[in-house]
Image (cartoon, rainbow, N blue to C red; front, side):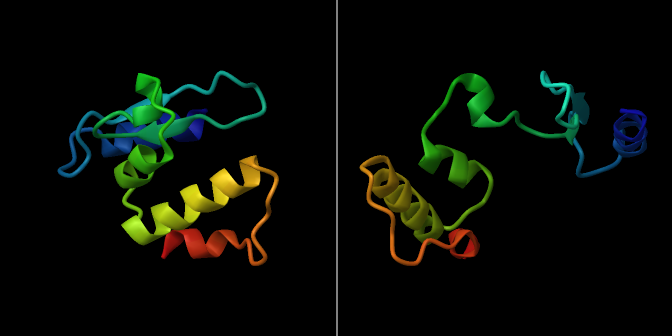
Length: 89
């Protein structure tokens, strides 16, 4: 936590880091995060993975691959080549 506070304080006031803040984790085994800018859509109650992907800058092709794989997995069908590194393309 001390490191997160130090990072937040170091970024505060610098150009390119509007609204810098430390987001406290609600889980004791998970680290806190330094965030800035617009709040992530999931904090608004959004569970649309395409909206989340666009917010975080993923390409439309990567979003389509991810959402298709997720839908197929939910149906019990695992893709033959299910590799997370492909989601970032």
